[in-house]
Length: 284
Image 1 (cartoon, one colour):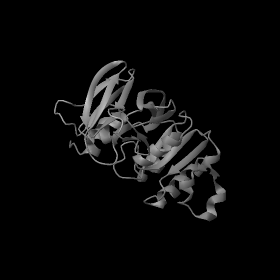
Image 2 (cartoon, helix red, strand yellow):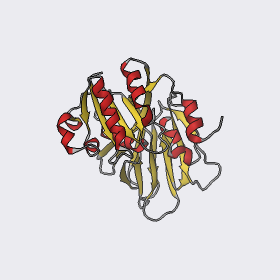
Image 3 (cartoon, rainbow, N blue to C red):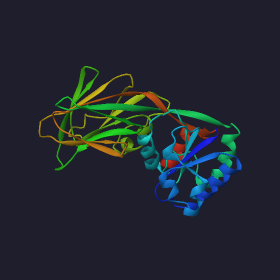
Image 4 (tube, rainbow, N blue to C red):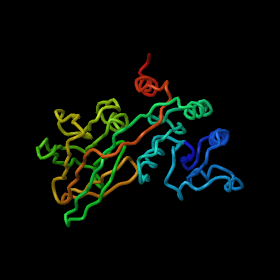
């Protein structure tokens, strides 16, 4: 690993964290590339020391300082998913991050000495097929959420698994989540937590009108098709909380497993179950 890109949130809580990371990478003789946001967190007089990450797509690793939102934003901008990500928690809950800033020196030593594992996460890909035949494509690491726009009222969302009718949800909206996203909006809406190594989707209704309409877990090999009932039933489709599309009753949404995966680098002592206990406050 020689070419290392650094991406951060716009304003790092503690700019000293970035300075420590830069110092460690220099110690290991790495070529350092900074994103536009990362440059905002260093002194302008230091700009000449680092190359621009926006002008290069070929990195051996991307290091992200920020919360889950910063990571999801970066995933939306990636053109290739081959480069592994190492995430440092510079936000709040930080389910996707591996370490806290205080662990940066130890983590860099571990990674560059080869003491790490690869954590591959499935993504979803989708497309919106408009009434006039145009198609808009998207991808998500966490989830896509179909929710009401404008006046808050129940919507009817016809849902198919492959070509088989599942149900017509009467709810405020619908979350289609990956295992990674199951600990995000999905769990807040009452959906189940899925172990990240599994390959599945979770469909969770938002405030359904009937108690019988609950979350369902389906194999990721299935295609999910959604259509809002009624030509005037406008909704929005939010992708990882980063981008949104307006949806009408004449549009059809198709969601399936993405052919590629996102790879996170993890230290050897990281464990998903420990993370659940610590970050969700499950106790001992």
